Image (cartoon, rainbow, N blue to C red; front, top):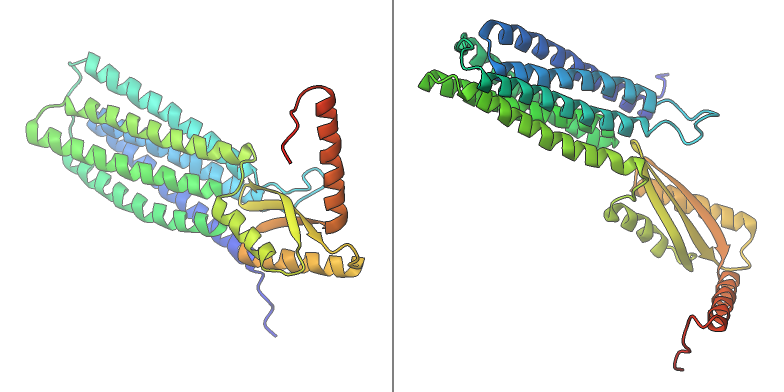
Length: 325
């Protein structure tokens, strides 16, 4: 008999495999760009090497964060380790800012020192930048698909890194063409400044997206609508409130209070809860949902009593006006 394959294990291994490919590719490109930057003396190629170096470090961080976030909950972390991916993405954004500062410093130094030797080895530089651009585009698309399919902030951050690297490689490629056509080495630091600007834009967006899950921001409205759609289409559900949602790394989390008939037995209430949670998980894979059951009529009486008591207290303190009947 062929043993059953655990889908979670397959997804986990696929994520790790993509992370390894990203790290290996970044390592090769960084080594090639650093060697070329030394040979050519190009600040734009050096800036691109720094950018790819940040990608390399980010790919390593992404790999280990994906591994760690996939470990099951333990006594110290009963909700799992999903947020480590958001921390990873946040750290990667800081690396991008540091890389942009180094690139800008190198470009400014080249502007201030016009006696630096001209860029050499342009043909080799053009070939490497073209190869880097194509490879990063292909790898970025593959990582982005995996990240969206498995809700992985770390892999999404890695994909954005590589996409930004592809754009900057294209910019350096254009700059080297301009140097070759015009013979003006001034284009080299100009492209370096453009690369730094592109890195800042990428880092800012990545920082903003990474901080949201750490602040327990709610899920997209479309995701919440799927939860409400399940509740609205079950006749046994008489009402619901206090829906709360958030991201925890690749996992969605939600809880809601659901109101049913007062005289429903505990067994039937439990069965309903399980059915609703199964439907929600089917509609939103990868969600951890918790449903709190309440008796509808008793809860309505309680709410009316609380509201009436609050209104009496506010009137007693002169904080409210009497409403017209």
